[in-house]
Amino acid sequence: MKVIGVTGTNGKSTVVNLTTKILEEAGYKVASLSSIRFKIADIEWSNTLKMTMPGRLKLQKFLRQALNRNCQYVILEVTSEGIKQHRHSFIDFDIAVFTNLTPEHIEAHGSFENYQKAKGKLFLATKGIHIINLDDKNAAYFLKSPSEEKYGYNLKIFNRFPTSNLQTISAKNIQGLGNGIKFSVGSTEFNLKLLGEFNISNALAAISVGLSQGISLEICKRVLEKVEGIPGRMEEVISEPFKVFVDYAFTPNALEKVYQTLKPKNRKMICVLGSCGGGRDKWKRPLLGKIAAEYCDKTIVTNEDPYDENPIEIIEQVAKGANGKAEKILDRKEAIRKSLKSARKGDIIVITGKGCEPWICVAKGKKIPWDDRKVVKEEFAKFRDQT
Image (cartoon, helix red, strand yellow):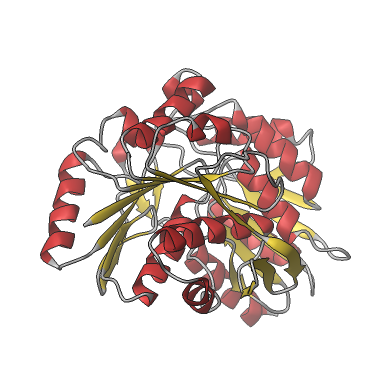
Protein backbone atom coordinates (compact mmCIF):
# COMPACT_ATOMS: atom_id res chain seq x y z
CA MET A 1 0.00 0.00 0.00
CA LYS A 2 1.05 3.58 -0.60
CA VAL A 3 0.62 5.68 2.55
CA ILE A 4 -0.16 9.40 2.35
CA GLY A 5 0.21 11.63 5.41
CA VAL A 6 -1.55 15.02 5.52
CA THR A 7 -0.40 17.53 8.12
CA GLY A 8 -0.88 21.22 8.90
CA THR A 9 -2.93 23.39 11.23
CA ASN A 10 -6.11 23.63 9.15
CA GLY A 11 -7.65 21.84 6.18
CA LYS A 12 -6.32 18.34 6.91
CA SER A 13 -9.70 16.57 7.07
CA THR A 14 -10.92 18.28 3.90
CA VAL A 15 -7.74 17.34 2.00
CA VAL A 16 -8.03 13.72 3.21
CA ASN A 17 -11.66 13.64 2.07
CA LEU A 18 -11.01 15.17 -1.37
CA THR A 19 -7.90 13.05 -2.00
CA THR A 20 -9.82 9.89 -1.12
CA LYS A 21 -12.49 10.76 -3.69
CA ILE A 22 -9.92 11.48 -6.44
CA LEU A 23 -8.09 8.19 -5.91
CA GLU A 24 -11.37 6.26 -5.81
CA GLU A 25 -12.56 7.95 -9.02
CA ALA A 26 -9.32 6.79 -10.63
CA GLY A 27 -10.26 3.21 -9.77
CA TYR A 28 -8.16 2.60 -6.67
CA LYS A 29 -9.24 0.95 -3.43
CA VAL A 30 -8.62 3.48 -0.66
CA ALA A 31 -8.58 3.61 3.15
CA SER A 32 -8.54 6.94 4.96
CA LEU A 33 -8.54 8.22 8.51
CA SER A 34 -9.38 11.75 9.69
CA SER A 35 -10.96 13.63 12.57
CA ILE A 36 -14.30 13.06 10.81
CA ARG A 37 -14.28 9.35 9.94
CA PHE A 38 -12.52 6.06 9.33
CA LYS A 39 -12.94 4.52 5.87
CA ILE A 40 -11.72 1.21 4.49
CA ALA A 41 -12.83 0.67 0.88
CA ASP A 42 -16.63 0.81 0.94
CA ILE A 43 -16.97 0.59 4.75
CA GLU A 44 -16.88 3.79 6.79
CA TRP A 45 -17.67 4.82 10.35
CA SER A 46 -17.50 8.02 12.38
CA ASN A 47 -14.40 8.93 14.36
CA THR A 48 -15.83 9.09 17.88
CA LEU A 49 -12.45 8.96 19.65
CA LYS A 50 -12.22 12.78 20.08
CA MET A 51 -8.71 12.17 18.76
CA THR A 52 -7.74 12.94 15.18
CA MET A 53 -4.80 10.56 15.03
CA PRO A 54 -5.27 7.38 17.08
CA GLY A 55 -2.51 5.69 19.04
CA ARG A 56 -0.02 3.27 17.47
CA LEU A 57 -2.02 0.13 18.24
CA LYS A 58 -5.21 1.47 16.64
CA LEU A 59 -3.27 2.88 13.68
CA GLN A 60 -1.46 -0.38 12.98
CA LYS A 61 -4.72 -2.30 13.30
CA PHE A 62 -6.32 0.12 10.82
CA LEU A 63 -3.46 -0.42 8.37
CA ARG A 64 -3.73 -4.20 8.71
CA GLN A 65 -7.52 -4.01 8.07
CA ALA A 66 -6.86 -1.86 4.99
CA LEU A 67 -4.31 -4.40 3.71
CA ASN A 68 -6.73 -7.25 4.33
CA ARG A 69 -9.32 -5.40 2.19
CA ASN A 70 -6.73 -5.06 -0.61
CA CYS A 71 -6.51 -1.27 -0.38
CA GLN A 72 -3.87 0.29 -2.62
CA TYR A 73 -3.72 3.65 -0.82
CA VAL A 74 -4.07 4.75 2.81
CA ILE A 75 -4.50 8.44 3.65
CA LEU A 76 -3.83 9.50 7.24
CA GLU A 77 -4.45 12.83 8.94
CA VAL A 78 -1.22 13.39 10.87
CA THR A 79 -1.19 15.71 13.89
CA SER A 80 1.70 17.38 15.70
CA GLU A 81 0.59 15.80 18.97
CA GLY A 82 0.52 12.40 17.25
CA ILE A 83 4.06 12.95 15.95
CA LYS A 84 5.22 14.15 19.37
CA GLN A 85 3.92 10.88 20.83
CA HIS A 86 5.51 8.84 17.98
CA ARG A 87 2.16 7.58 16.68
CA HIS A 88 3.59 7.86 13.16
CA SER A 89 6.53 5.58 13.98
CA PHE A 90 6.94 2.37 11.95
CA ILE A 91 4.69 3.65 9.16
CA ASP A 92 6.43 3.95 5.78
CA PHE A 93 4.96 7.14 4.31
CA ASP A 94 5.21 7.50 0.52
CA ILE A 95 3.69 10.99 0.26
CA ALA A 96 3.63 13.88 2.77
CA VAL A 97 1.26 16.83 2.31
CA PHE A 98 1.59 20.20 4.10
CA THR A 99 -1.52 22.43 4.18
CA ASN A 100 -0.55 25.45 6.32
CA LEU A 101 0.85 26.43 9.70
CA THR A 102 -0.43 28.96 12.24
CA PRO A 103 0.05 29.02 16.04
CA GLU A 104 -1.71 26.09 17.73
CA HIS A 105 -0.85 23.60 20.52
CA ILE A 106 1.86 26.03 21.63
CA GLU A 107 1.54 25.12 25.31
CA ALA A 108 1.84 21.42 24.50
CA HIS A 109 4.94 21.90 22.34
CA GLY A 110 6.58 24.75 24.24
CA SER A 111 6.98 27.10 21.26
CA PHE A 112 5.86 27.67 17.68
CA GLU A 113 9.29 26.46 16.51
CA ASN A 114 8.77 23.14 18.29
CA TYR A 115 5.27 22.87 16.80
CA GLN A 116 6.72 23.47 13.33
CA LYS A 117 9.50 20.95 13.99
CA ALA A 118 6.94 18.30 14.99
CA LYS A 119 5.10 18.78 11.69
CA GLY A 120 8.42 18.68 9.85
CA LYS A 121 9.19 15.20 11.22
CA LEU A 122 6.57 13.75 8.87
CA PHE A 123 8.57 15.12 5.92
CA LEU A 124 11.86 13.85 7.32
CA ALA A 125 10.23 10.41 7.57
CA THR A 126 8.92 10.57 3.99
CA LYS A 127 11.53 10.14 1.27
CA GLY A 128 9.21 9.79 -1.72
CA ILE A 129 6.96 12.73 -2.59
CA HIS A 130 6.48 16.02 -0.74
CA ILE A 131 3.48 18.27 -1.52
CA ILE A 132 3.63 21.76 -0.04
CA ASN A 133 1.40 24.85 0.09
CA LEU A 134 3.67 27.52 -1.40
CA ASP A 135 1.36 30.32 -0.25
CA ASP A 136 2.15 29.55 3.39
CA LYS A 137 4.96 31.59 4.91
CA ASN A 138 6.46 28.40 6.39
CA ALA A 139 6.75 26.70 2.98
CA ALA A 140 10.54 27.15 2.78
CA TYR A 141 10.99 25.20 6.02
CA PHE A 142 9.19 22.16 4.59
CA LEU A 143 10.81 22.45 1.17
CA LYS A 144 14.23 21.91 2.81
CA SER A 145 13.47 18.27 3.68
CA PRO A 146 14.98 15.87 1.11
CA SER A 147 12.63 13.93 -1.16
CA GLU A 148 12.62 12.20 -4.55
CA GLU A 149 9.91 14.52 -5.92
CA LYS A 150 8.48 17.85 -4.80
CA TYR A 151 5.16 19.42 -5.73
CA GLY A 152 4.07 22.89 -4.72
CA TYR A 153 0.60 24.36 -5.05
CA ASN A 154 -0.40 28.00 -4.87
CA LEU A 155 -2.97 30.61 -5.77
CA LYS A 156 -1.25 33.82 -4.69
CA ILE A 157 2.52 34.06 -5.06
CA PHE A 158 3.88 32.66 -8.32
CA ASN A 159 7.53 31.78 -9.01
CA ARG A 160 8.39 32.30 -5.35
CA PHE A 161 10.48 29.12 -5.32
CA PRO A 162 11.93 28.83 -8.85
CA THR A 163 13.79 25.56 -8.28
CA SER A 164 14.26 23.00 -11.02
CA ASN A 165 13.02 20.01 -9.01
CA LEU A 166 9.75 21.66 -7.86
CA GLN A 167 6.63 20.94 -9.91
CA THR A 168 4.11 23.72 -9.37
CA ILE A 169 0.32 23.47 -9.58
CA SER A 170 -1.22 26.94 -9.67
CA ALA A 171 -4.82 28.11 -9.50
CA LYS A 172 -5.65 31.09 -11.70
CA ASN A 173 -8.76 32.95 -12.87
CA ILE A 174 -10.18 32.62 -9.36
CA GLN A 175 -13.77 33.66 -8.73
CA GLY A 176 -15.80 33.43 -5.53
CA LEU A 177 -19.35 32.52 -6.42
CA GLY A 178 -22.41 32.78 -4.20
CA ASN A 179 -22.72 29.02 -4.07
CA GLY A 180 -19.14 27.91 -4.72
CA ILE A 181 -15.70 28.69 -6.14
CA LYS A 182 -14.29 28.75 -9.66
CA PHE A 183 -10.65 28.50 -10.76
CA SER A 184 -8.41 27.09 -13.47
CA VAL A 185 -5.41 24.78 -13.35
CA GLY A 186 -3.71 25.02 -16.73
CA SER A 187 -6.53 24.89 -19.28
CA THR A 188 -8.87 22.92 -16.99
CA GLU A 189 -11.60 24.93 -15.29
CA PHE A 190 -12.96 23.79 -11.92
CA ASN A 191 -16.41 24.77 -10.62
CA LEU A 192 -16.66 23.59 -7.01
CA LYS A 193 -19.67 23.70 -4.70
CA LEU A 194 -17.36 24.40 -1.74
CA LEU A 195 -17.08 27.92 -0.33
CA GLY A 196 -14.00 29.98 0.49
CA GLU A 197 -10.60 30.68 -1.00
CA PHE A 198 -9.02 28.30 1.53
CA ASN A 199 -10.98 25.48 -0.10
CA ILE A 200 -9.19 26.24 -3.37
CA SER A 201 -5.96 25.50 -1.49
CA ASN A 202 -7.46 22.30 -0.10
CA ALA A 203 -8.58 21.26 -3.59
CA LEU A 204 -5.12 22.04 -5.01
CA ALA A 205 -3.51 19.81 -2.37
CA ALA A 206 -5.76 16.91 -3.42
CA ILE A 207 -5.19 17.65 -7.12
CA SER A 208 -1.42 17.64 -6.51
CA VAL A 209 -1.64 14.17 -4.96
CA GLY A 210 -3.66 13.02 -7.97
CA LEU A 211 -1.19 14.43 -10.48
CA SER A 212 1.74 12.90 -8.57
CA GLN A 213 0.06 9.51 -9.06
CA GLY A 214 -0.54 9.98 -12.77
CA ILE A 215 -4.23 10.89 -12.41
CA SER A 216 -5.43 13.42 -14.97
CA LEU A 217 -6.86 16.87 -14.27
CA GLU A 218 -10.04 15.73 -16.03
CA ILE A 219 -10.59 12.98 -13.43
CA CYS A 220 -9.81 15.44 -10.61
CA LYS A 221 -12.30 17.92 -12.08
CA ARG A 222 -15.01 15.30 -12.50
CA VAL A 223 -14.89 14.12 -8.90
CA LEU A 224 -14.29 17.47 -7.17
CA GLU A 225 -17.22 19.09 -8.93
CA LYS A 226 -19.50 16.41 -7.45
CA VAL A 227 -18.54 17.22 -3.84
CA GLU A 228 -21.47 18.94 -2.12
CA GLY A 229 -19.59 19.68 1.10
CA ILE A 230 -17.48 18.25 3.92
CA PRO A 231 -19.26 17.18 7.15
CA GLY A 232 -18.96 19.89 9.82
CA ARG A 233 -16.80 22.10 7.61
CA MET A 234 -18.78 25.23 6.77
CA GLU A 235 -21.77 22.91 6.50
CA GLU A 236 -25.05 24.64 5.70
CA VAL A 237 -27.60 23.14 8.09
CA ILE A 238 -30.52 25.56 7.57
CA SER A 239 -31.15 27.43 4.31
CA GLU A 240 -34.40 29.38 4.85
CA PRO A 241 -35.54 31.90 6.04
CA PHE A 242 -31.96 32.49 7.21
CA LYS A 243 -28.83 30.38 6.79
CA VAL A 244 -27.12 28.46 9.59
CA PHE A 245 -23.57 27.17 9.10
CA VAL A 246 -21.70 24.78 11.40
CA ASP A 247 -17.92 24.74 11.24
CA TYR A 248 -15.04 23.10 13.09
CA ALA A 249 -12.90 26.28 13.21
CA PHE A 250 -11.26 26.64 16.62
CA THR A 251 -8.04 28.50 15.78
CA PRO A 252 -7.90 32.28 15.20
CA ASN A 253 -6.74 31.86 11.60
CA ALA A 254 -9.47 29.34 10.72
CA LEU A 255 -12.18 31.36 12.48
CA GLU A 256 -11.28 34.55 10.62
CA LYS A 257 -11.31 32.76 7.26
CA VAL A 258 -14.77 31.33 7.97
CA TYR A 259 -16.10 34.77 8.94
CA GLN A 260 -14.51 36.42 5.90
CA THR A 261 -16.09 33.83 3.61
CA LEU A 262 -19.59 33.91 5.10
CA LYS A 263 -19.95 37.61 6.02
CA PRO A 264 -23.09 38.90 4.21
CA LYS A 265 -23.07 42.34 2.61
CA ASN A 266 -26.39 43.75 3.69
CA ARG A 267 -27.56 41.39 6.41
CA LYS A 268 -26.52 40.49 9.96
CA MET A 269 -24.08 37.73 10.90
CA ILE A 270 -24.77 36.12 14.27
CA CYS A 271 -21.91 34.06 15.71
CA VAL A 272 -21.85 31.36 18.39
CA LEU A 273 -18.42 30.27 19.61
CA GLY A 274 -16.40 29.13 22.60
CA SER A 275 -12.96 27.66 23.21
CA CYS A 276 -11.57 24.29 24.23
CA GLY A 277 -10.54 23.66 27.83
CA GLY A 278 -8.09 21.18 29.29
CA GLY A 279 -5.42 23.89 29.52
CA ARG A 280 -5.06 23.97 25.74
CA ASP A 281 -3.79 27.18 24.14
CA LYS A 282 -5.31 29.60 26.61
CA TRP A 283 -3.59 32.45 24.76
CA LYS A 284 -6.03 32.18 21.86
CA ARG A 285 -9.25 32.61 23.88
CA PRO A 286 -9.39 36.43 23.98
CA LEU A 287 -8.16 36.50 20.38
CA LEU A 288 -11.14 34.38 19.27
CA GLY A 289 -13.45 36.85 21.03
CA LYS A 290 -11.72 39.79 19.37
CA ILE A 291 -12.13 38.27 15.89
CA ALA A 292 -15.82 37.55 16.56
CA ALA A 293 -16.43 41.12 17.73
CA GLU A 294 -14.76 42.43 14.58
CA TYR A 295 -16.81 40.40 12.09
CA CYS A 296 -20.08 39.52 13.83
CA ASP A 297 -23.09 41.76 14.35
CA LYS A 298 -24.08 39.67 17.38
CA THR A 299 -21.70 37.42 19.31
CA ILE A 300 -22.71 34.68 21.75
CA VAL A 301 -19.91 33.01 23.71
CA THR A 302 -20.79 29.58 25.07
CA ASN A 303 -19.45 26.27 26.34
CA GLU A 304 -17.40 24.04 24.02
CA ASP A 305 -15.20 21.27 25.49
CA PRO A 306 -14.21 22.40 29.00
CA TYR A 307 -12.64 19.09 30.07
CA ASP A 308 -11.51 19.66 33.68
CA GLU A 309 -11.55 23.48 33.52
CA ASN A 310 -14.34 25.73 34.78
CA PRO A 311 -16.41 26.44 31.63
CA ILE A 312 -17.53 29.82 32.95
CA GLU A 313 -13.90 30.95 33.25
CA ILE A 314 -13.21 29.91 29.65
CA ILE A 315 -16.28 31.83 28.46
CA GLU A 316 -15.14 34.90 30.40
CA GLN A 317 -11.69 34.73 28.78
CA VAL A 318 -13.17 34.54 25.27
CA ALA A 319 -15.70 37.29 25.99
CA LYS A 320 -12.97 39.54 27.38
CA GLY A 321 -11.44 39.77 23.92
CA ALA A 322 -14.77 41.00 22.54
CA ASN A 323 -14.62 44.12 24.76
CA GLY A 324 -18.16 43.87 26.07
CA LYS A 325 -19.69 43.09 22.66
CA ALA A 326 -20.49 39.46 23.47
CA GLU A 327 -23.37 37.79 25.26
CA LYS A 328 -22.36 34.92 27.56
CA ILE A 329 -24.55 31.80 27.72
CA LEU A 330 -23.18 28.72 29.46
CA ASP A 331 -25.63 26.19 27.98
CA ARG A 332 -24.64 25.56 24.34
CA LYS A 333 -28.15 24.51 23.35
CA GLU A 334 -29.55 27.71 24.85
CA ALA A 335 -26.90 29.72 22.97
CA ILE A 336 -27.94 28.10 19.68
CA ARG A 337 -31.61 28.69 20.51
CA LYS A 338 -30.89 32.37 21.21
CA SER A 339 -29.04 32.76 17.91
CA LEU A 340 -32.03 31.32 16.01
CA LYS A 341 -34.44 33.67 17.77
CA SER A 342 -32.18 36.64 16.97
CA ALA A 343 -32.03 35.96 13.23
CA ARG A 344 -34.21 37.58 10.59
CA LYS A 345 -34.79 36.65 6.96
CA GLY A 346 -31.53 36.71 4.98
CA ASP A 347 -29.28 36.74 8.06
CA ILE A 348 -26.44 34.23 8.60
CA ILE A 349 -25.73 32.29 11.79
CA VAL A 350 -22.25 30.77 12.19
CA ILE A 351 -21.69 28.17 14.93
CA THR A 352 -18.03 27.21 15.32
CA GLY A 353 -15.70 25.07 17.40
CA LYS A 354 -17.18 21.58 17.11
CA GLY A 355 -18.29 20.90 13.53
CA CYS A 356 -19.55 17.31 13.40
CA GLU A 357 -17.91 16.19 16.66
CA PRO A 358 -20.13 13.72 18.53
CA TRP A 359 -19.30 14.74 22.11
CA ILE A 360 -18.87 17.57 24.57
CA CYS A 361 -15.95 16.61 26.83
CA VAL A 362 -16.30 17.58 30.48
CA ALA A 363 -14.53 16.81 33.79
CA LYS A 364 -13.37 13.35 34.87
CA GLY A 365 -13.20 12.04 31.31
CA LYS A 366 -16.97 12.21 30.84
CA LYS A 367 -18.36 12.67 27.32
CA ILE A 368 -21.83 14.08 26.68
CA PRO A 369 -23.39 13.02 23.34
CA TRP A 370 -23.64 16.08 21.09
CA ASP A 371 -23.90 17.22 17.49
CA ASP A 372 -24.19 20.93 16.67
CA ARG A 373 -25.97 20.10 13.41
CA LYS A 374 -28.60 17.94 15.10
CA VAL A 375 -29.19 20.50 17.87
CA VAL A 376 -29.63 23.28 15.28
CA LYS A 377 -32.23 21.24 13.38
CA GLU A 378 -34.11 20.29 16.56
CA GLU A 379 -34.17 23.85 17.90
CA PHE A 380 -35.09 25.25 14.50
CA ALA A 381 -38.04 22.84 14.28
CA LYS A 382 -39.28 24.07 17.69
CA PHE A 383 -38.70 27.68 16.64
CA ARG A 384 -40.64 27.17 13.40
CA ASP A 385 -43.55 25.45 15.19
CA GLN A 386 -43.82 28.36 17.64
CA THR A 387 -43.89 30.95 14.84
